Image 1 (tube, rainbow, N blue to C red):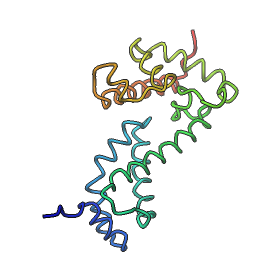
Image 2: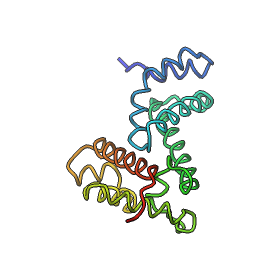
Image 3: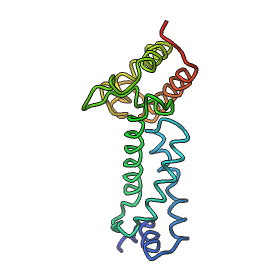
Length: 187
């Protein structure tokens, strides 16, 4: 006996025909997994909520382009990944004036030097705030943002799950954001 069609694809087919209830069921069935996927890469809880909402809005708009192949969850994660990448690029451009965009200060620009774009005072505050982190967290940040190591690779190096690495990085970024907002200056 053949396996039945993927349950998400059954809902996707109905959503492609304009069935809003079917799309709502897709959201209910995938939201936790998509939220976790986004949270592992997000810089704030508000970003998680924003990207999650935008992911489903985009998915609804583009549902007709989804090919029924049993990969709806991967398709949704791809949308989320692209939206997060766009948000990261926006933050890179706004890093000098927007403390919510801490990633733009931590991560190096691959194509050009950010020193010309980011104020010296903000960089001094970031350096000062980095010093308030433990040596392990500073090393983790350096490996992730300057070394470009993936969460999976970092998890393997630290003998812990990638989700644990993501949580540690999230907390470190929150600490840095709060520190920068307080206006910590280089001693």
